[in-house]
Length: 257
Image 1 (cartoon, rainbow, N blue to C red):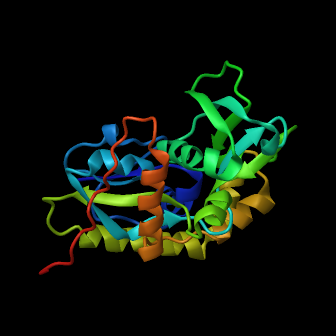
Image 2 (image 1 turned 60 degrees about the horizontal axis):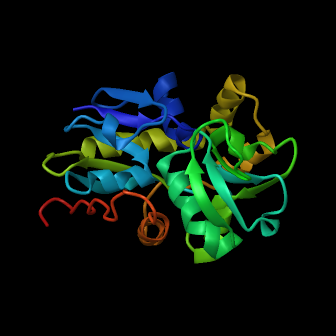
């Protein structure tokens, strides 16, 4: 057994304590940038981008004790050369964006922005007027044009907080509670030392510190009922035009139930 954790900006209050030795886990762990469901071994516990969870519906369960849920600001953004209400139809470029970011833009594009996607691109070239960015780039103002916070747009559209990451474990695994408890303690340490976490982030990349504070201060780290509802809506609204699954892993039942 090991724990595999997506190494992303919004998971830094979990990954930084583990990387720096401020917290420990009772099993081996691995931090991996751009983690997907396909990267996992059958017995892995994983902290993954929420959109990847549908690939694990048949084999894993959701552990709601640890998650990343945005507050009033997020680290997924849409960039455009002109105001979005001036764009009718365009290709959409996903620039190093997770599946969660793709589901989010698909869910918002027509209902919120009134834009029709003529296709989706992942390369650096093309004539897309809409570019989706994530992480550090999403909290950095563009040199020109407009930028929209997609987590904020999702909250305005649905009244629900956007879920970024979830914790999953194999269905047949017994006793993941010590791992979950240790992950919770690591998150608590990261929240308590969030200023130190932000200093470490700023040492590694140029970042808008005010936006970094805004985003990280508003994060929540458990999947409650509203978060679960939001995640189900994201899958339902955002999976059109894809081959992605429509089912999420079931929540893990408490022991003895």
